[in-house]
Amino acid sequence: MISKSNDYFSKILKISAPYLEEMFSKKQIDNLLLTAEPLKYLTDNKEIVKKWIGIYIDFVKNEYQNEYQNTDKKLDGYLNEKDGNLKIIWGNCLDAMKGMKPESIHLMVTSPPYYNAREYSQWKNIYDYLDDMRMIIREAYRVLDNHRVFVFNVGDIFDNDNVKTTSVWGKRRIPLGAYFTKIFEEEGWTFVDDFIWDKGEVQSERHKNGDKPYPFYQYPMNCYEHILIFHKHRDDKTKYPCPVCGTLKVNGNAYSEIGLKSWECKNLECFERSPANRGKRFSLKTIMTQGRQENVFAIDNDFIKKWRRDIVKINPVIKINSKGENVLGHTAPFPFEIPEFAIKMFSYPKEFVLDPFAGSFTSAIEAKKLDRVGIGIELNKKMFRDAGIKNICNNFSQEIFDNSNEKLFSEFNCLGEN
Image (cartoon, rainbow, N blue to C red; front, side, top):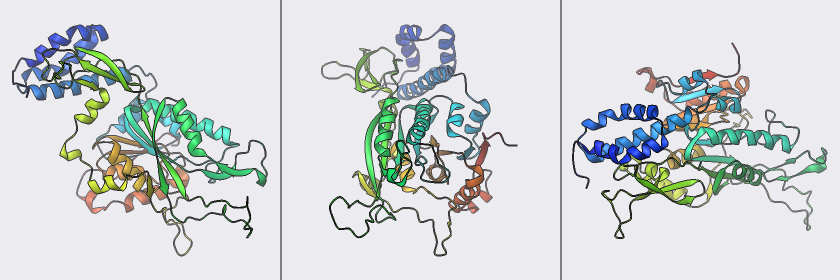
């Protein structure tokens, strides 16, 4: 148990001073200490350490973000408005993300437009498609917070890659899941898991073989998609305070994952030492995860059990009614179970969740339901705005908002329209 002393913050600063001077300018240190000044009036040392670490991490992030010169101040102001937890951005997701601060999003979850699978997602060939996706994945790496997660749903499709021939004979199974995994890793991400979404008995033409029950004529029905899990671990060599004593008297330790720098406390007066007199070993990621192991953040056991296996059965979204009408107004709606899984497993309340290919805004809707800030970027405003707004309204009881000042959603336009 950390003892109580009203001068403990001064002790933290005294021990940490040479390390602060090694990493930051005098002006930066002065700004940090100005923000942290209220801590000297606290008497609970455990509270001092917790608040000091939070202030320090925010300071380091702000300094890193300030190095980026292309932040769109209007977009940044919109994203940080306190009015509403569901934000719609109309525009090209690559351009929109270029206007965001580095490491300002806490979770990404999306399903990209599949290569030439819909009228609104057409490319000359598979190379052009993957080149466009690579640029978006690269920008997503910059925007996502360090040591955070991108949940990426994609299916392997049956189509013509238009590389060698454009005739019907050029159709084949295109392994988009494999292609995307390679791109993600080449752009610095770490592949972690591949959940298989079992879609059950779905509509498909590929298995039909003209009633030829002979070898080489048999093909399976495509009834699965990938839910790929990627981690971002930017190699950050900035020293972080020991989560036990709060001092910066720490030495670099081994990397626990590629790009995930860990530290060991060398403060002999730290409140936690091993039997061999080793200090606390930690990383920025463990500060985030271990520091929030509280009942309020616990995930329901039944939900964990549902996702314990890496093959998960989820029924596809039913979009066509008995009259043949598309009731959702979108040709490729996203099942809510996927963003629900991502949000519960890889984020905390009040954090920012971004879907760069928002479609009918299911991810943003689920984020709002789970007390996160849901952000969706969608290019096809004319095609999908009415359907998206309808989907949002159908997911929330208007009575909830009639007696409050909170907006159900808000919009930001990056399309250059009046």
